[in-house]
Length: 455
Image (cartoon, rainbow, N blue to C red; front, top):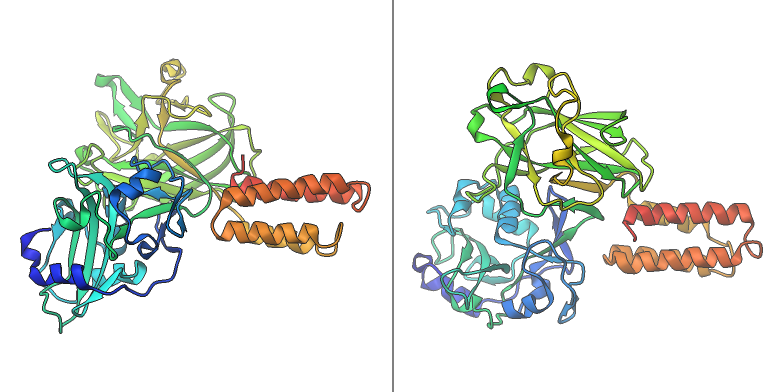
């Protein structure tokens, strides 16, 4: 801990009392990540967490910490924690350093965060939330990194609200140390999502008009295999600071097509606004603004078929000669997604002679979410449909169990119940259920499973 936080803050950590908090998820961020209440994982060490959770910030945990089952949850990296802190508090450059200790008491940003992430300790008129992250301290490998954020009112002996986001050597974050007031930072997607993001640091501008560099195109595209019938789609985008163009609020156009490369059938077009502020924090992803999403839930896709999303800007915003757009999309050269590919659409600016074969094993980074009617409503509607249908109440009981598991949230268990539901419907076809009703129930159940992302 930094010395200028003062001895009273050390006392706070050592002798505080637990904050009051409800169990389970506590906040859902703009990227669709649902964050776990830190109080659910207190009194476990960094090593305890690493024993059941990968540290890449992408692969879900498998196992439990005490009574908390973390299966399906992902242990957050420092950058992911900074993203959610930035979203809630509005802090930007203040998060570039390991700590921020303004000489101002009762600031709005600290209260805003603690309203969404309940305190893990309360002491000396301060509320503090402390959570371990995946990162290790480069200089002191025996220590992990943690978030500590607190708000102190006017009666506190601590002079200021504060945030420490990655401090290294300190007793509370030794990898083998368990503290009753320090938990972990964990998240999971609110709904099933296909995320293609391998951490690549390559990016391309959405449009480029630089013949001298053999770089002329008006748009880029990524094909994909539809995982859900109704989707939201977002490219992971970059604020291209080199271009020197104001980017915040810039209209960005997403065109959704059926097909890949050719022929393409335009299904829908959406215009979204490029967000203000970047999340890159000086990393290799300088200017990263996260996934910029568009809602395509009004278009029904056929699961398993190929589709394409093209990204471009309005004609009036296309770059002039020897310039490019001030926004870009992160792109991987390592082919992280087998269900589609990156390519340049054939346009007047990018003629058919473009070597799209060269890009066949590259992918733009993107996220596809399940959109449309909330899954809970789909399950409840099917539950009402089977009331009094079939043998006893067994079909309705299965739907009630599926809803319980999904709300837990335990999508894998909910999917297993839905599979059992379909098997029971098939077994009762021609007996307790007419063929027509059985086909309808099977179709509706499959729609629920597709929306949940069941395999």
